Amino acid sequence: MTAPERTGPDGRVRLDLPRLPAPGALYRRALLGALPGTGGRRRPDVPAVELAVSGVTVDPAHLADYDRVCGFRLADRLPATYLHVLGFPLSLRLMTAPEFPIPLTGVVHVANRITVLRPVEAGETVDFRTYAENLRPHERGRQLDVVLVGSVDGEEVWRGVSTYLGRERAAGGGPRREPGDRPTPPAASAHWRVTPRVGTDYARVSGDHNPIHTSRLGARLFGFPRPIAHGMWSKARCLAALEGRLPESYTVEVAFKLPVPLPSTVAFSATATGATWDFALHDARQGRPHLVGTVR
Image (tube, rainbow, N blue to C red):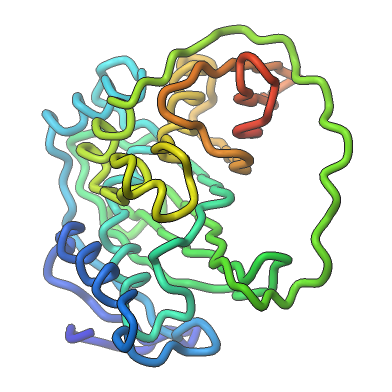
């Protein structure tokens, strides 16, 4: 990673990049690194490095395209999940570094937490920084958190924490849990038909062109019978259904359960308890859980 650097008070070396990286080149690097005999030696822990980029602006046409794909109303106020998309190339650059402890190919996004400290408008300029932390064992491999922070004029306005699972054959997290009885899903407030176009459209607006979302062959290479929807599309679609009922500042946390195959029909449910919303996505026919989340 070649960029101006300095060490922050948390001990991480901060590397300032001149611009957001291009996601396509980073995915090609990840795929090449997965070939036998390539990829170099990975660290046993998270690198003490933080990547940063300043002066990121919003393209109104891109924002409108994102809003349409995810079901938001067209507006100048940024959806909470849009800032994840805006800064994602920076996190992707971190995750595709040769020394990153978990290879990007085959990684599973298992949870995401976003904190909106104040609304962000489309005309504002955002500075991003990203780093990884909390590498830990899991029953199927190892997990870690990738943190992405958005600031405006030196003030933190948004923070996202994405938890990723790197699946490994020799997992060190102990015995796997038994599935047990599946609880009855809550009553649905809406049903959504999720078509294969969701995979390609969200890949276009997010820059996340992982083939498990857009290609039947690519999905099969990673053990899925057909493409699956992006987890962050599912989260965004749920937030769009709650649009207009969310406070100015809040935290929305989701756990991604079973993938949403493309095509399929999903059932959305949401209940309010005071200022807290609990919501979920289930398979409309069999009740299998795809996502559970909370806004507080």
